[in-house]
Structures are given as C-alpha cells and as structure tokens.
Length: 212
Image 1 (tube, one colour):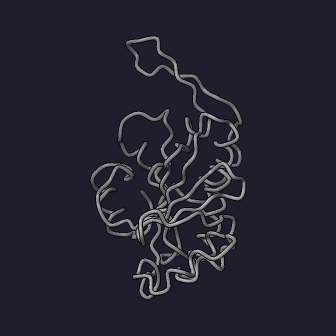
Image 2 (cartoon, one colour):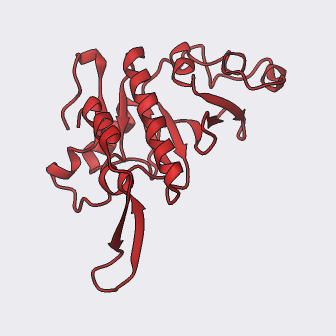
C-alpha cells in the first residue's frame, strides 16, 4: 500500500469503536477502535526505517554525562543521532536510555504515546506478512521505531494515528525508506496477496512506493 494512501485513510477514519467476536465458536466479544480494526493501529506498533548509522548512535558513548543534563530538549538530547532521525523526533521528548545504547525512549507531545528506538537486524514478532516480506524487512531496514499506547482508550488510539502520520510525513521529507509492517487491519483474514498488499512500503530512492 502506498504511504500517502495509508495516511489519508487514517485521517478519514471514523472515530468509533467496533465490536467483534474473538472466535466464531463462542460469544466472547471484544471492542477495538476503528483505527485498529481497519488499519492495524495498536500498541507496540513498529515503524521500520533505513538510516545511515555510520558515526552515529548506537556507537559507544564517550561522554555519557551529556545525556543527563536538565530538561528534555530534543536537540540537546540527540547530539549522537543521525540528523534525519532527529528531524523525525521533533514532536517527541527524550525519556531515557533503559538499555545502554540499544534502546532510547521518548514521549509524544500529547503525553499518551511512547516511542522506543531500537536496532532492527534480526527476526522478532514485529515483522509483517509472509516469509518473503519478513526477509525483505530484515534486509532493507536497520532501525525500528516502536510506538506504545493502550488503544482501548479512544484518545490514545487517536494520538497513535497522529504520531504515525507525523512520522510518515517527516520520513518522506527526509527521503528515508520506510515500512509499516503492521498496517493490516484486524478485520482482514488470511495472508493472500490482497491482504498483504495493505503493508505499507515507501522507498524514495526509486522515486515511488514499492509495490507489495
């Protein structure tokens, strides 16, 4: 799916909840926001990027004290990040480094959504699609932005969509390859081509979005 089409669909999505049966054989009913049902927006939602890391984080920290100055100004906290990644984080405030250089945490300006920056170089549960998609995602991307939020709350679901849109727009401006591996709505069943085509890929080096 094209990035612009996905972001437009998020903007036009109805602000409502959907009830669905968890299994055809029972009467248990769950309730999720339409953003989740139609477009997969949910807590622990990954965004994959390809960014030049040479000379930037996660190289070893040589001046660790600089990360613990007062305040959370994004420029002051991110002196070791690739400038393109800093620009993606304009609306995020630094929260800390819980795992040495490997994970960095931020809070969205709205205060309800968190973000982790992680290296992305091995198999994990955040891939999307069949084997050919998994191989492609491991091969083509090296950074994962993990968005965190409890989407059973309406305001969190809306802020997640806002954060996804903001990062998507800024990624295009920076000319960075991007993938939303979990952009398939929960309503979709199976893994045929029509379903897998909902995975968003954006690759500016080819001057167009990659077809799924």
